[in-house]
Image (cartoon, rainbow, N blue to C red; front, side, top):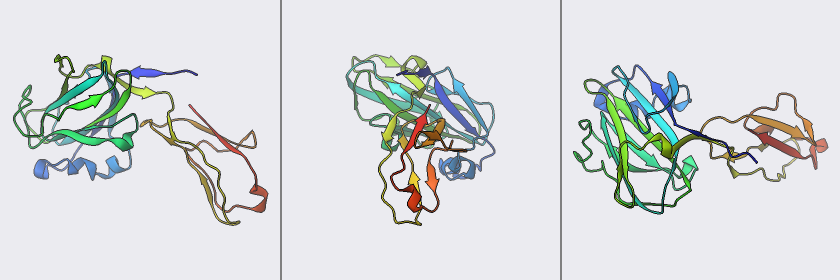
Length: 238
C-alpha cells in the first residue's frame, strides 16, 4: 500500500474577528470555525511560524509532527496576541491536549515572558507521527507566531521546520466499520473514524456494487428493511 506523506503545515485564516478581550474564544466560537469554513487556506513552507498582514484575524495551523529521536522535547511558543499549542499523543486529533500557550502577548523571539510559554518535557518516540495544532488570535500592532522545540540532545529548532512536519498522510483508520444489528425500520449508520484532519475521498459499496451517490464520509440507511439483512457494506478511502 502507498504511504503518501506531504511536507508542510495546513493553515486556515479567519478574518474580521471581534477584538474584544483578545481572546481565542473569538476564534473557537466563530461560526465559520465551528463549521470548518475558513476565509483562506494554504500550505505553508515556513514550519510552525507565520505572519499575516492585517488586524482582527485568527488562524489555525495543523500538521503531523515527526520526532527525529527518542526522548523528551520541550515546546515553546511566542505570539501576538494569544495562542495555544496542542499536541496529540499520536496521530489522532482526538488525543490533543494543551502543552504551551501565550496570554496575552509576547515580543517576537521571546519565549519566556509568561508562564505557560514553555511546555513541560514531552516524551516522543522516533519515527512516530504526532498531531499538532496551533491556534492564534491577532488583534492589532505586532503580528507574529512561532513555535520552537528543544530536542532531547539540547539543540533548539526555531521554528519547528517543515522537515519535521507533514500535513497529509495516507488514510489512517482509527475505528473501522462494525457489524450492525438493528430493528427493522430503524436507521443504520456506517461511519469509519479516521485520524486525517483533512477530508478524504469515499466510495461506498453494497454487496460489491457501487452505491449511487455513496461518496460521503458515512453511509446511512434511513429505515432498514428485511431485504437489508446480511447485506455487506464496504468503504474505499483515498
